[in-house]
Length: 508
Image 1 (tube, one colour):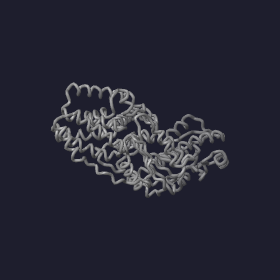
Image 2 (cartoon, rainbow, N blue to C red):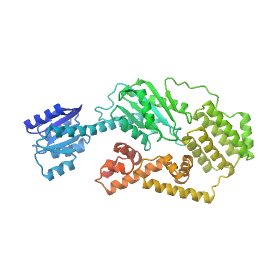
Image 3 (cartoon, rainbow, N blue to C red):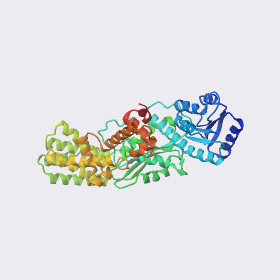
Image 4 (cartoon, rainbow, N blue to C red):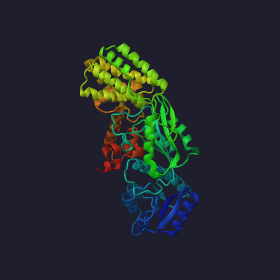
């Protein structure tokens, strides 16, 4: 129940408002009353209040002054002015001070019911966001907020991690959960909107393709938590997709959250198979003692011979055979990656001398080939593209470089013209007729960043420009203009990129 304080110096009107709330307004109860703003402020400083209904004119401290003080001292509290004055200046001053609405006396019960129903949705969203931030703080080892009413008040939690497609690029060397909340996660945003009212939170994972799902109930929306998975996967659906979902079926306490999420990550990384949809119970997962990920001596010698003689057709035949065998054996990505690295080492060593700079670029190309492949066939094509490039030449012809830079210019303009739209790397690639691996490689080579990082930084840069030029523009409208449908999620991304919240940036 949301707690209401009524500040009114006329007892009959106070009793009337109290009765309306108690009989007509669900999810609200009157926690306290005050005869003036000074008394109301004293109560608020010692008790938890969600909503203040205040008369405009009161002794000692009037309603306008009260909500102005609350705006600075308790910005999370919603306020509504109730007054017999219809003067526009009163209305203007009330909204300027931070009031959510302005009602004229006598207040009709239907008016109050409709207004509080709207404010309940606003409070639901605020508390959902508060809980989400508390969960993120726990995973990031940050201190919990002192303002924790109604936050995380559950005895047990259920958790899962959903991974869309392959594992994150390995050149992001910090793999801890504490380093995971980097850039905009549109799937998490969609899931947050889906489950906001059901005690289920979605938190961005290590990149845009990953979400941590936390539930404060065994059931959510009248479904078992494990039954929620199918809904979640459906929300993440689309072309060029496979998913790996790892979950824990037994409840955990809040203080056990981080260690259990880390355990889920370990199992996810061990279990993921490129192109295969999987739902894995962490308590039933057994780490198999697989054959060591080492090339057999005979095969290694054969590949070295073919590479040194630049026998590309025969080299490719060996790779086709290997990849087919791995797909049949359902080898996990981490195992496949180790073997591929050994093969690329042979190519580097025996084909063309590679400088340190090109070696680093080769590492990035490998990481992106793994990350964006949705089948063993796609992975083979990407790896062969890398090998062919290294074995034939390390230099990019001027004509190809010019074409690549022209493509990037067109993509850049496309992104800037469509910041408000929801799109992914795959959609951009489809529109321009190129592969994800190729476009991602171009961003790394010529812009020294990933596609997702580039788009996020463009969006936040544009948001800063809009706020500077339009300081009175509502935050939700700024968020929409730059492609975020949820202003609270936008605020988190903004703070991650800039180091300060949108409101703090505006205050500068």
